[in-house]
Image (cartoon, rainbow, N blue to C red):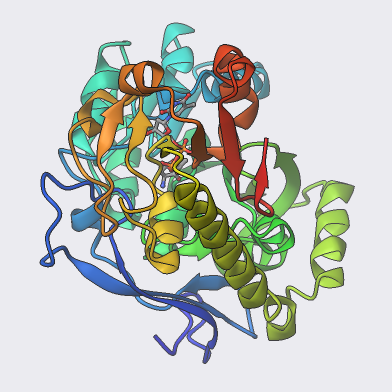
Length: 404
Ligand code: DWN
């Protein structure tokens, strides 16, 4: 990919991770025929968007057997309940408000909007997870959000007072069409907001495994303000979220006489200090990634040679990047335990590490586990007090390799 998907300028490559499978593409049996693509990210020097160099067709990632259910984390349940309450406050003065959530997944957020009796629509193309949300009374449409579907929604329901999305707006390659759709569907004083892994945190804390097929864009205040302007929208606020290793929530409104929060300038100043408006800001990144990978392999080999069992904790999407880039397979990590029923019995994409149940981990009590869901560390450490008391150790690789 040479041209920026937003502004068509020539992009500059930041890093290539080589061939990668689909991050959530857990398989029934490891095979050399798994689908792969080249995972690389590029920077646009004109509009500052960091983006994948090569993408995977959305139908290959989001379908009727998508393996990520948002409600697998209690911490995220709490986070999204708080977001729903925030939305309810924002629309307090509206007569018959209408809320649209793009990527409503299993209803983790929008079920609270539905419960409050508010007119709403969840958009979720992965039908298996959308089905779960229907059990909570969520009104959901299994389509991809774009200009055309936004016009359809507008025709059927009218303008939306809130359009929001979490960990999804970075998933959609044709982002210009999403923003065109938002500009059509949003009411004149409505809010469009979304939260996604923040490129500032990814670079600063080296959470490089946030880079994978589903994440087409890696947003900053710098890039979102340019993208918004292109579609008659304005970035009016930014609120940092302490989830997924560091996320940013961006608030957009139609361009009128908006009051822009001072936080927009504050975060953009931080980004510029880290030089995220120049290729230079990203160049130390590769070195840090390679250090973490080689430190982790060295540690795993040492523990293995001492006869220890090493397992993985949580078969996350992001671990696909780490495992495949570092070349870690079942010879070093025997299995990964996970609480998602549909992942049990499958194998991690590319690495071929078997996924076992949480009960298997409890019975096996491996001496060491690599914490792939480091973003849920607080919740997981609270749950694993007994395991750690009895000598179980977590290997953490974010932001650097440590044993806790
Ligand atoms: O954007 C995305 C983010 C929000 O979620 C998606 N593209 C896909 C997904 O990424 P992920 O798989 O890296 O997400 P998590 O939330 O870091 O990992 C969830 C996995 O961890 C699930 O398979 C469940 C598992 N898990 C577990 O086994 N025990 C999670 C917790 C909290 C646990 O205690």
